Image (cartoon, rainbow, N blue to C red; front, top):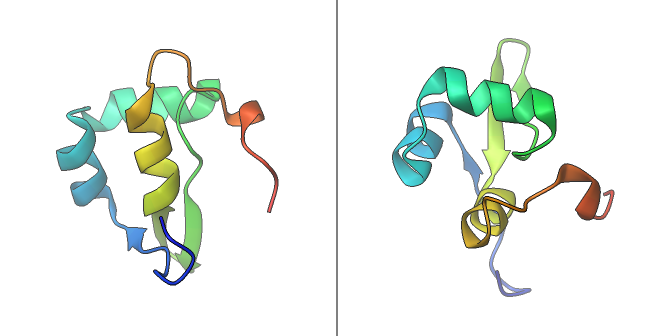
Length: 71
């Protein structure tokens, strides 16, 4: 993403549609550190940073959460 474009927060249905993963596989990958962790939007609402999902999509086989810089 460019510096002047804000990072959007994607909800679960959008992430599933973009990645082609099913819900259980997505959460299994999150738990294994092979997919970006969700961020809390509200008490019962989470989402994913679009930039993190796009990073995963560039190389899903070798993605590791540990490779990402802490914010």
